[in-house]
Amino acid sequence: MAHPDPGFAGRAARLHELLAPSLADDWPNLPVVRGEGAYLVGLDGRRYLDFVSGMAACNLGHCHPRVVAAARQQLETLIHGPVGVALYDPILQLSDALAAVTPGGLDMFFWSNGGTEAVEGALKLARYVTRRPAIVAFIGGFHGRSLGAASVTTSSVKYRHHYEPLLPAVYHVPYPYCYRCPFRAAATGSCCDDPFHSLDRLFRHVVSPADVAAIIVEPILGEGGYVVPPPEFLPRLRDYCDRYDILLILDEIQTGFGRTGHMFAAETFGVRPDILVLSKSIASGFPLSAVAARRDLMSRWSAGAHGTTFGGNPVACAAAVATLQVLRDEGVLENVRARSAEAMDALARLQRTSPFIGDVRGRGLMIGVEFVDPERDGAPAGEVVRHILAEALRRGLLLYPAGYAGHVLRVIPPLIVTREELAAGLAILTEVVEGLPGQWRSGETTRRGG
Image 1 (cartoon, one colour):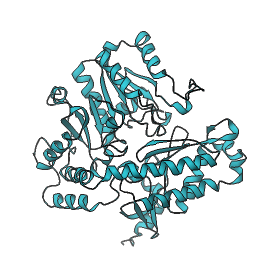
Image 2 (cartoon, helix red, strand yellow):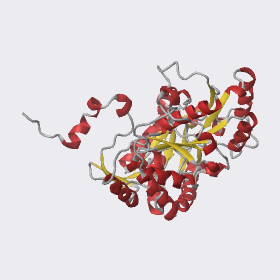
Image 3 (spheres, helix red, strand yellow):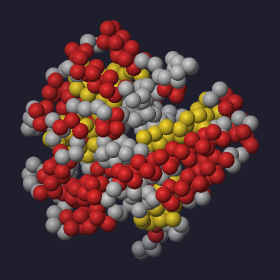
Image 4 (cartoon, helix red, strand yellow):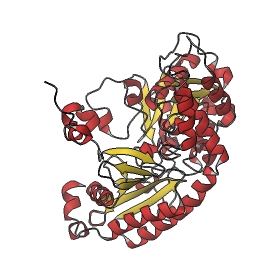
């Protein structure tokens, strides 16, 4: 006898029976029925301002009409190739269009499905073409969860726990996290040179630079806490790579496609990568990623050295072409820069009045607010952030944490967010922060959980 369909609500109640904890135990598992621009519409009928943007994958908001139209048209003609067996125009259109905007003359691409795959591809490419074994990454970086990507990931130990041994010949040095830099010059507030001192020590005592294929870095740390480096850091790292003939891989999975106010963070910081890793917002929510490199480098990655079945899917490529067109035609980057100034100003005002905000930092609409316990010498206050997340959601604003202790609040609205929508979201956040309950003001709760 057939059982009646329990519907979405009934299945949602069985979430932890149906999905693995590694997938289901996250924040907040909000049941949603559709997305509209800067909003998600819940099963309860409420409209929630989405300042998570599909984890920065929906830079144009949800269901942008031009992206939907391009995907729908492609769905009616060809859904799957695969590339290499079938040749279809969307993958060529996209490659041509992307080559026109990527920094540093990166004009050849390997297409895959998600950011982790692209990181794996970039590491393989670097080792393959240099014939060198070693990779250097930065402490606090997040590059994915597969074994190779997890090997260069150190934003939290949870991504590595129980998976050792990971990829050999991977070495880590500090990222310039200036707010928590123990060597920060008190008089000037400037960050130390520790990343470069550490690289020098690494190359003197541990691994020869002649054995290093690549250095991989996020221009702005994502999962690691939305940490913005000093403006000179990436150009100095470029010079360092040039000195030793090491490839520089920029992981722009979170920062790419307008998030920082430029098409790529490489432009924001004035640096030229050898390899660029792209995903998330590249196709406005469709699964797609890319490894980009100059033709003289990528053309040495011979047939059979890497491959994919679903990478460069025709529908995803069509959506990505439309995404690039919208970014070009609709003043999106100008909107990012205008809204960024408003957001940073509002959050700076909030910081001046709240003892719980230690730092506000960001570029474009990639903003981190670091919460601290003022009674524990500025210790990370993860439980305060968890309270803020819950209270903001109750008021209709979706946010998400970052940082090794969950103590950084990400503010990543879609790049098409209006002045009014941004102001509404920041008003909710301000109300919640200003109304923090007494147990945090006394420091008791953060001592237990922060």
